[in-house]
Image 1 (tube, rainbow, N blue to C red):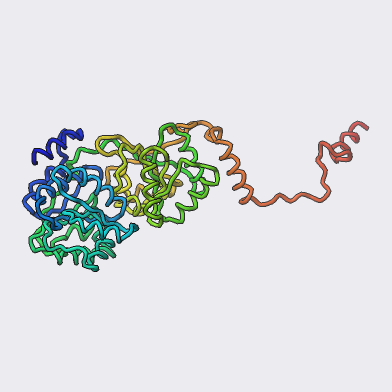
Image 2 (tube, helix red, strand yellow):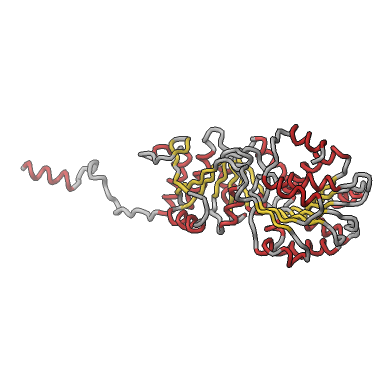
Length: 422
């Protein structure tokens, strides 16, 4: 590692390289194509950033490296990291993401950046407009490769590679493996070295996996209870945007302002505001989906809540990776009824995830079940449950002109008492 990078590495408080950073440094530095598999939060961004920068010729105005990300948020996150390091050697970086004025991005390309960080769709648009040339490209990084090398984005990425010089260095990075990632040589006609450090990586902190038994109807109430837990912050995952929006509507109806949303349907400015507010602690809960939250890095995130349980183990792994990063501890709370939790445990058979039950005891999470759980309900919860019960229950039919037995002047019970006295 160059001395200028080594010094900055230490200034940022890093004592040593992580397993993935050690594994791919020399191969990437020598322009060998690699696939790097490592847990989320294990330093994959720096794993490709430092060797990539050491290949850049700062005296040349040609585009020499491109990093492709699956979302605008992750692209901007990576852009900020690379920009910080690139300043050390006077290298220019531009971001090209969707949802942003394309004219401004075209103008930024006139400054001849040596590195571009962007999303597939926007890069493809600018390539078709003839605004980007790959003729001098030395490195192409495909981050979150298991996600990008599927469905709509696989074809354009392969087209990008076809536009590159034959000796371009390809880097594929991911926390989980898909069938395409397992057979990259077939798809990209290159010899690609594989580095899987998932078993030896030691960056993960202790992460507890818990199950909070609750019916679907009462899940919104549980989110209200989490807001009363001191210092609690969590990413809350939903499988569908419709479910997310309905839950957010319930919380807004109860005048909750510590909650924000992060979805692919929001405008870029709105998404960035939500994410920044969550990172700063303005919001305690960030409601999101797997697509929108892919790869985002929140320092020392205490918890992840699976409001909707994931449908496959791969999704569960990616959600888990949002907490317990870089030696920090974390907790995963899976919400569902007894049947849902059993299905989740079956889904994760063969993994190291040991899911135990957790309960609410007052405004605290507890390992033990409280004796009288209902006594801890807030007035909001009681009112909500009363309303739900009233809607679900059948009306009680009373006889016309009926009179309360204790108050009626001519009740049958009173008449019987007079009869006995006689």
